[in-house]
Structures are given as C-alpha cells and as structure tokens.
Amino acid sequence: MHTPISDGKADMTLNERRVYERLDPLTGKVATVAPAASVADALKIAKSAGDAFPQWSKTSPAQRRLLLLKAAEALQAMTPEIISTAMAETGATANWTSSNCMAAVEMLREAAAITTQITGEIIPSNKPGTLAMAQRKPLGVCLGIAPWNAPVILGTRAVSTAIACGNTAILKASEMCPATHLAIGEAFRRAGFPDGVMNVITNDPKDAADVVAALIAAPQVRHINFTGSTGIGRIIAQKAAGYLKPVLLELGGKAPLIILDDADLEAAVNGAVFGAFLNQGQICMSTERIIVHAAIADRFIDALAHKTSTLTAGDPRKQTVLGSMITPEAAKKMDAIIADAIARGGNIVVGGRREGAVVEPTLIGNVRADMTIYSDESFGPVKPIIRVNDDAEAIRVANDTPYGLSAAVYSANIQRAMAVADQIESGICHINGPTVGAEAHIPFGGVKDSGYGRFGGKAGIDAFTSIRWVTVENPQQTYPF
Image (cartoon, rainbow, N blue to C red):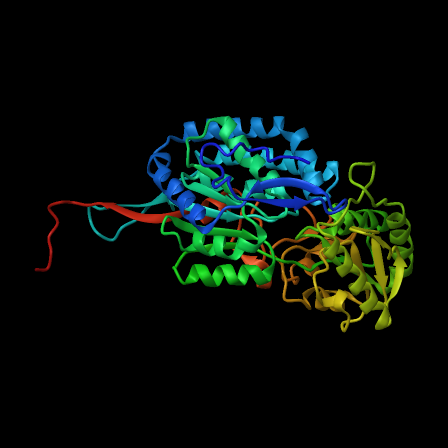
C-alpha cells in the first residue's frame, strides 16, 4: 500500500481525521489512503487561498518564475515515486506516467516563462490629453478540477498558468488518484511557495458533489477550470453561472482519424495505433473513429489489425504496452460496447477479450451509425472502423457527433488534407499525425460539447487574467456642465 506523497503541510490538505481508500483497479487491494475533506474543509482551504492572494498577486514576475522553475525541478526529482503511486492508483503503465511527469515539468517551465509575457497595451483615446491603457490583472483564487486519466499533466495544467499569472489556486484532486495529485502540491511545497498559494484538496467520492459545490460557491473563488466528462462539465458550468463565475471546460471527445486514399499506409497505421490505444484509450484526444476510404480499406485494416495484435495488455508492473483500465466497471463497459456492435452486424477484427480490468486492444469492423461504438465515447481500447466512399462522406462522418476536441487527417496531398481538415468541427486537428498530442505553449481546447476556452500559452493568459481599462487624463479638462 502506498501513502500520499504530500504530508498535508502548508494548507495542502485538511481534515486528516477522515480518510478514504483508493483501490488498485487490477488487484482490488488498497492502493492509497487519502484525507477525506468535508465541506467545512473546502471552505477553509478557499479562505486560505483567498488570504494568500493579495500578497501573491504583488509578487514580482522574477520571483514567480524562480519558484515555478523550482517546482519543475522538484516534480522531476519525484518522478520515480509518482510512477509507483500512479501505477497503483490508476493501472497506468510506467511509460505513460513518466511521460506525464515530463510533460508536467515542461508545463511548469512554460508557466515560468510566461510570467514576463503578461502584457497590456496602449489604446488610442478620443479624449485629448488622455493616455488609455488595457492592463492584465489576476482574477483571485482559481479552482482547477482535474481528472485521473493524465493525472500529472492535467493536475499541473489546472493550476500552473493561474499561479504564473498572479492568482492563487486550488487543485480539486480526482478521487481515483488522490496521492498522485497530492504529489503536485508536494512539488510546490518543496519549491518554497508561500502557504495558501497552491492548495490540493482530496475527498471521498461520496462527498465530491458537495465539496465541488462549496468550492464553486466560495466567495474567494473567482474562476473554475474543469477537465472531464461533458455531463459533469455541464453541471459545473451551471453552478458557476449562478455566481457569475467564468469557467474553462475541456470535456469529452469522439476524435476522428480520416485516412484518405492517397495516404502513406504505414504512417497512418502507426498514428492510428498510437492515438487509439495510448493509455488504454483513456485520453480525451484518443482516436474514437477510424474513418478510411473504401479504396484502400482492406489493405489498411489488414495492416492495422496486424499492428494491433502485437500490442500486449496486462499488469502495468510488468513489461506491457497497455495496462489496466481505471476500474473493473470501466472494463466491463467495453464488453457491452462490443456486444452491442456484434448484435447490430459488426465484427471483431482483432482483440475482444477482457480479464478483470484489463481489456485487449480491440478493433470493430462493419460499424454503422446505429451502434453505441459509433456515437458514444468509449474511453477505452475498443475502436470502430468506418468505411467511406469519398472525402465528403469522411467529413460528414467525422462531424456526426456532438463532440469536437481533436481530429486528424492522413494524406500525401497536403492541400487536399487541409481542405478536409478545414471542414472538421474540432478545436484541434493534425495532418499526418495522431489525434493525441499537446504542447504546453499551444492553445488547447474544443468546440461543441467538448467545451470552451483554451489552456496553453497566450490563450492561458487570457483565461486566467481579466482586462482592466485605466486612463491618465488631463486634470484641467472641461466638462459640459
């Protein structure tokens, strides 16, 4: 059994009298024990963050940059411990958690870099003798609610830019990986951040709705960002709207991967396998529809099936490409998706078996629009293959979803690929690359039911600051009365 990496100091966690257990999804044994915060604890932590804001907002960019760089160093040094913890909590492989840590370190370094890029502008005024300015100002306390599937990346993203912009932050940890998210807070503590600037709160799953509602309602909290399901995102947006608090939502996806008939098949197969099965397909950008031109479909599917059949799935503590799913229940959901597809005329191209929380990488052929796998986000390693006759049909199928996060197009003709990509309704689109990809300095987010707002780079500055109009005027100006 692992214990949480954070020791609870510096307002990282509260109410250590109440705890809850997170079970290892593969073994069913206790993976970690974490503090189970109450609503009262949530309000205390909001007050702590609010009390720290006035001083932190006045901290120089150089000091913020230094501390963020130290947090990056601390997180990097903690990587082996975090890998062990996340493996037990989420069933993820060491490679996936290691890449999470590397990406989170880069996010912290990028956040450090933007501390001197939070600039305003001089605006021409129609009033003679007036200097008009737009200033970027921090918002106050920013609440970040992060999921379990890319825990170090998304937990760090939820707070790093906010803190770089002069806000204080609360990370509401996922109930599925409390110790992994506490590790992010511990990195900030080791870096020497003042008390109350970065806070992590963990809670028992049965208390989640009440704790989140209390944090959203807390007067100190002025902004909420949430990464997770569209259903929960709607609830959070509605609650925040009641208090006129802005939100940034990165929600579900049904990412299409379009293979045009002139694509490099080997490259397309490699991109499809990576995008479909990385982290057991439990990524918001995971390839959820493999859309292939009928003219090359047989050759592509044969090559894709062969590549997929070489992927191993099993205990993440051993040498394997795919680990376990987040819960046994999530794995059982794959059985239902497969059964529905077969009952409606689909066929298993490769895979299809499950053992406990481990699901083989699976491809389903002959997919039609009336199947669950066509319309619903599987969030697992079971993927549909859809044949289309031309580019127009490929675009129609790609857009035949309420989601719009990521997409990809493979073609040897870049102009053709650009024309297709331009008609796909998504916040992200890659040409000749997989649907899964992110960089700390690049705007990231979706459209339609995949949310709104953007993380990353200058878009992140926009999200975590407000614009204030300031003028310096002629005191001798005249007035009409």
